[in-house]
Amino acid sequence: MSARRRPLDGIRVLELAQVVAGPFCGTLMAEFGAEVIKTELPGRGDDLRRLGPVEDGTSYWFAVDNRNKKLMTLDLHRPGGQDVVKRLVPHCDVVLENFRPGVLEKWGLGWDALHAINPRLVMARITAFGQTGPLRDGPGYAAIGSAFGGTWYINGPADRPPARPTPVYPDYMTGLFTAFGVMAALRHRDATGEGQWIDASLYESAFRVMEYTTTLYGRQGVVRERGGLQHAGWPGGAFQTQDDHWIVFTAPAQHLFERLCTMLGHPELPRDPRFASGRERPQHIGVILEIAQGWFAARTFDKAVEELRAADIPHSPIMSMADIFRDPHYRARQMIVDVPAEGLGSLPQPGVIPKLSLTPGRVDHAGAALGRHTDEILSGLLGLSADEIARLRSDGIV
Image 1 (cartoon, rainbow, N blue to C red):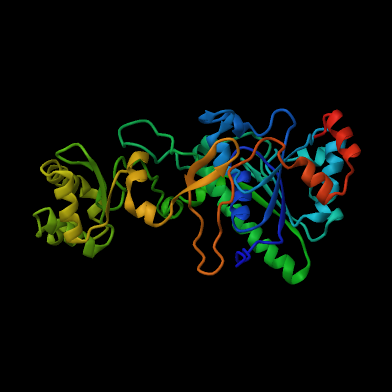
Image 2: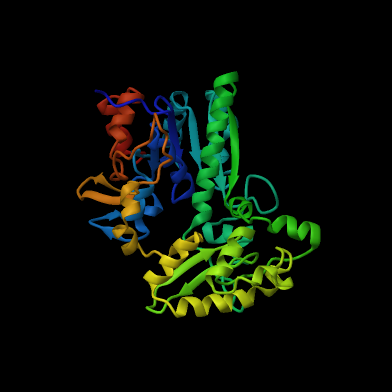
């Protein structure tokens, strides 16, 4: 029996992006069947190929975040490479790019030029600060996005300097937001025939996940500060057990707070005026945390987990990657998959793909070698002859 078609089968994406945010967006689409053609500079490739641990010339990071794609080399700086892009665009539904604003325009590959070639095109543009505003030309990576977006400020212990949120979540969040934008734009395109472009930025993705912080300052003038190991609004955080394991729990709702107090041996606390409501509770949170620290310190990990489960308090051990690989729940959910990788056999990778009941995505192969599919794309999609491809290669265009 043939495999069921995936939701994005028939969608073709031209990825003019590197490092994380743009490529992650492309990978999400490729996992659901889109044909993603990624371009890389000849002889050099994506900078991600040189980041993170490397085995036999293969970056684990690149292999994860560029899986399922077709990879071709193409020098976008040169007129010959720009011409190839213009020849590819009529065959594509989506273009992803993450150059600084104006760079593609300088090369004749901006929105106006590509839209004129293919009016149905959806173009996603990812930058650090967006396509407009006084900082539009500024460079940036995830660290810059988290700093300017506000999440760096509130991360870390209350009595220490701001700590960098890790890993590079603004890149991944921007990839997610962009993929959602692309899906919405494709739906509009399919209904009306109109293409459009999407403006996404790293700092705005960081800013969007700030919970209530924006409204709190806008309405009350209160600057949210660092909360350390627990959330600023309710009991919880990381606690060390008698045998030196760490457990996180959280009790944001009133019924959970009542269960927590009973478990900690202080069932009277919910009636104490200091803890009677969500308004007073944060001001006296230290009392609860001190009790919790003593409670965990007096118990082994197994005993603490047993009692947390009995009280039905949301909790988890703080998992290292070794813990994750041993964990039966991760395995039952197929969250670690062995992915075919050229020259390496297979690589264990995250199996995190939205689990559609009828048309699930899948991982077919890890990020491939530089230029692996160049000839296939040029000959199969553009109909170039072997001599034409050879000339492009000798000229350093591919």
